[in-house]
Length: 126
Image (cartoon, rainbow, N blue to C red; front, side):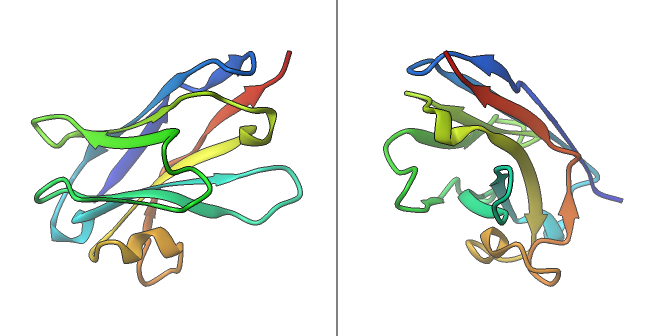
């Protein structure tokens, strides 16, 4: 059974950085693709970054490209999301999710993103 546990969220000032972690256990081929999502208050959940665990290929939505970096450790047991130049509009709950196909696990559909973590809160304010 796949388990995903996020950590690393917190409160930061604009311009700061955070590194979120997603610990992966029970990985199988159903976790070939890992993605980070965020859901801001009153907004729909959106996939922001994805990684193919096999070779480390990455994909980003345009709104975060250049500020967000998704990566994994050598053991492929943890997926990270480095967020730089944080802005108030980055305030959200951040979730990691797993699915079988890259980059489709960024879609957030039941078929493509079938395992989820509990989320970690990121708050950006001065």
